[in-house]
Image (cartoon, rainbow, N blue to C red):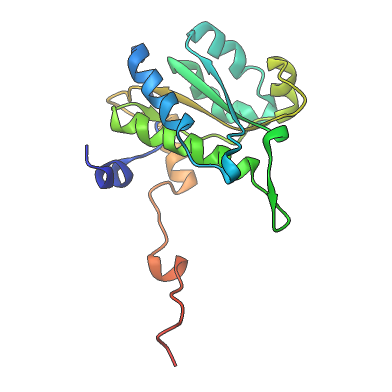
Length: 187
């Protein structure tokens, strides 16, 4: 797929086929994250990968009350949790970059997955405290996001359609509202 097609067609997927992601495809996705740029090349990202659906179902029950809205992750054949090691942070202009760096890395994984026909859904609705306790991760790690990964099902569930509509997932602001050219041509 051409890169522009990957960007234009990528969408959040909440309905998955049970088919596992082949190991070589999963490694390609993870490699895309590994190769991401980061401030001063600190590479703060740390990934926890689940490929056992029974373990994903257990994890889904340990994302806190807010995480119950993500119950659809139980059907995914793969789940990746993006963490950032705060010990690898660099602070520039009073800005911590470990979260930004990890988000860039995770987005590269999302795009690499879509390029191989693997869908995902970036999730921030979880209790970091509850999930942290369940995973027993190092104290220096922050959980940035999590995403199920898998091949999209042909038909969307009512739940998926409702979440997509509620989130306004297809709506995008026009460039005129998000970009300012400098110097302005208006005088």
